[in-house]
Image (cartoon, rainbow, N blue to C red; front, side, top):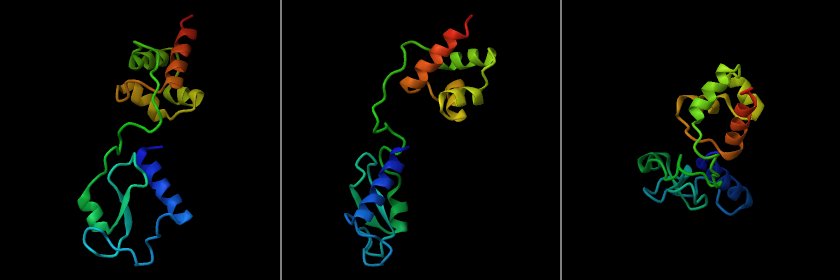
Length: 141
């Protein structure tokens, strides 16, 4: 789940619990222009309840929040050192392990395996990285 999705979910839960006012009633005004607020704006997704009510126009003017695609709230553990995952996925493909098959085996998306193969993702999270390394060693025989 992305930082943005976590923050939006936290706001939704806060509204349901009554910690933030619902915005559909027309009573809450935009902090920037005074129009009726339509949404809550985050300036930093890692601070999910630090929000301000704004209208759609002002939300668009403000632009994206910090940490939109930045570091995850979940601490990332390094995969085994000095592994070229791009080459590892290519090697596994040559040994008969297609991307969808790898994704099913390890419970991740085929897009994740594709991103490793193309170099868009250099290092997966530890469980996937360790499992790929283990499978590569098992298929060497």
